[in-house]
Image 1 (spheres, rainbow, N blue to C red):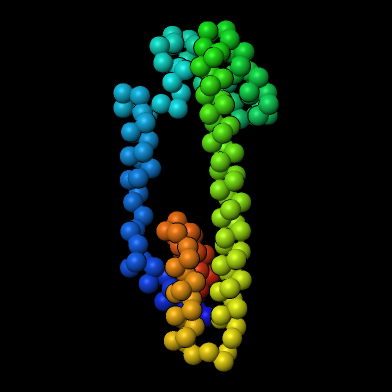
Image 2 (cartoon, one colour):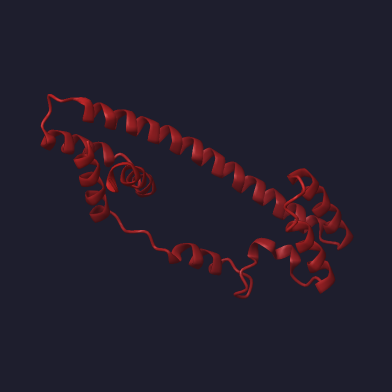
Length: 162
């Protein structure tokens, strides 16, 4: 099983583009406001320093509950005349989080299905390593590149460093 895991990950590394550590940075910069990296906070643009200071004081207070923070930020937005912009920002953030939860649920289902089949292949001692590898590779090809990366990370963590 360990040999299959290692071969599977080596094959996957050769078969799809690697992780680009600059992707997140580039995406962030492309969305940024004049290169300052705050597009996700467009409602802050043009506000006086005092308003910005108040905003960051509320947003950085991690001792309060999420509900308390949301209410404080809504009051802050109303006070500084950016209520509509802030509500649009909050709604966008909520939609993004919902999409994240849906994607995570789908990924969990896909990984569960993959690993059940992977274990079934590895448990069949009537097969040769060649056959097991071919079946595992075929199974691996049912995944997209991000899913392949997650699988390799899991397999490497369990088989790669021992």
